[in-house]
Amino acid sequence: MIALPGRFGRVPFATGLLLAVLTAGLPLHAAGKRAKNAPNAPSPETPSNASTRFAPVEADHPLAGIWNDPEFTRRLLGSYGFNAATEPSLNLEEQTLLRDQILPVLRLEPTNAIPLLEAAIQPDASAVFDYTLGTVLFQSGDTTNAVRHFEAAISKYPDYERAWKNLGFAQVRDGHHAGAIKPLARTIELGGADGEVFGLLGFAYLNSGRPVSAGAALQQALLFKPDDFNLQLYLLQAWVASAQYEPALKLLNELLSANPERANLWTLRANLHVERNELPQAAVAYETLRRLGEATAENLLLLGDIYLAQEARELALEAYLEGVKLVGGQDTNRALRAAELLASQGAWDEARALMGATRSAAGDNLTGETKLKLLKLEARVALATDRGDEAIAVLEEISVSNPLDGEALLLAADYYAGAGQREKAEFRYDAASKLEGFEAEAFVGLARLLVSAQEYRRAAEYLQKAQKIKPQDRIQRYLDQVLKLAAAGSSKEA
Image (tube, rainbow, N blue to C red; front, side, top):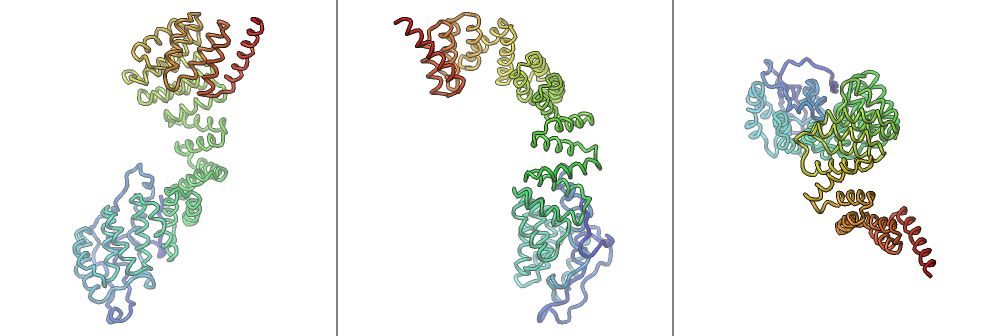
């Protein structure tokens, strides 16, 4: 957690947070009327009963580690000292109003002081009132109006460091990361640099698509708090986003040596190795997650992809099956993609096992396009493993329910072509050739039928049509061979 002391050190927390902002000491310097007969600043007489919560974020929010830290909350609402050279002053009348009317209300419930502060805010009144109202609103979660009052305080007193700081924090809290950059940078310029300011500036840069600047700011933040885990994570993100993988891996290894049980660190390490195409190291990281019992379905499916890329089919299938079990029926398409990868490498038995597990896990969720996709993949695997009768029954069923399914038509045509049933094959290739996106493959299929019947000229015509639609080197080589056969046949006829 970020818990950095401010410029004035740690001070016992005996009063309410809003009260601390106001009673840390009030400026007594001013020009003309404001400087005359200025009494001592109001000071707290009793502990405050006001809330010390500061609009906390949800536990899964990326700022939760920082924002929900009680020490950060205390620092956010104001330092416990006062720099008279940079803070706006109050005249005698304003100090009396603050001491006698506003502070007693703030001690009990800060939001009840809003009407008093609104009445105190005037064009020529001290910027302290604008800032204080902004802070009350910020504490209650009304960041939109808090921003407006912080900006008003700054317009009156351009060097109001705490107003700039809280303005930047409010913008970050509201998700306006680009808008937070200027006030946070201005805070640093005015001498308010600390780990919190640099840390949130880095976070703002990171979420504004400026990872290099984010890294620079976060490295500055870590000078104040070198062991802060959240800052280190943000720096890791910045380095990864800017492709600075070497320092990212070094920092990640340091964090893992101190936190070997943290699943998010192992996930990040695996992703880094994948990004660098270091697949064996990525597999080790994912296997560590697996042993920790923290591997997600996506982790396991990616691990399967890695093993498959290394031609370790059995290990791939094991990871895929475990991933599909975790996915259940929630992401059948991802499981089918894994089965397609297995099939594409000729791992027919593994593909069949994974499809069976997918069908079982999906249960009633297997409907519509997903079901058709699985059926066609099953048919493709069946065709490749000499179970054509099983495959064609499925394909014909698909074609009856959807005559415009080009993939099913082509698979069925391939089956009939292999079975020597030219008429049935030709009919389905012809039907597929009329469907957008399937024309080229259908023309190639028709050409092969004609080549098997030694009708080379007609075959060449279909191949030329296919090349016009979707040029491919392998089809061009096939066309050249067919043209030679056609020419040879013409010579013999002559």
